[in-house]
Length: 108
Image (cartoon, rainbow, N blue to C red; front, side, top):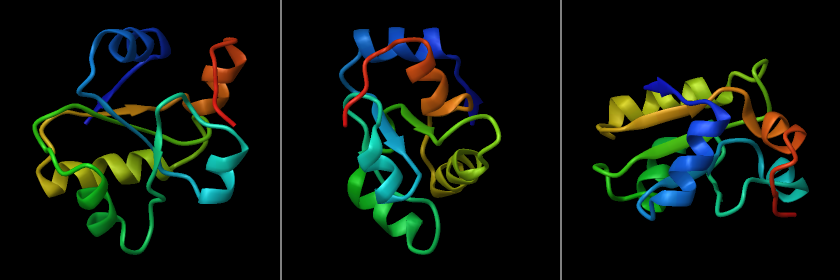
């Protein structure tokens, strides 16, 4: 698992079509707002099964994120992805609060 900064993430999302962006917070939090193109797979019980259904291709990059640097959901998710054999896993540690604070677009 690698950490990824906002600017790196934006560049990756702008230039690659094979990146899976996964918010690992609850569905309720996801519905409030999320990064454009993100899917929602909440970390917790059953995460391993759900993530493999949602993101079956383990060779492509996967970026997980949660609320902010205080949130521990994305590091937990990234660790599980590593254990499941995903080859390129990034944790956007600053999370969606950082993205929104920078004035970047979100989906509601």
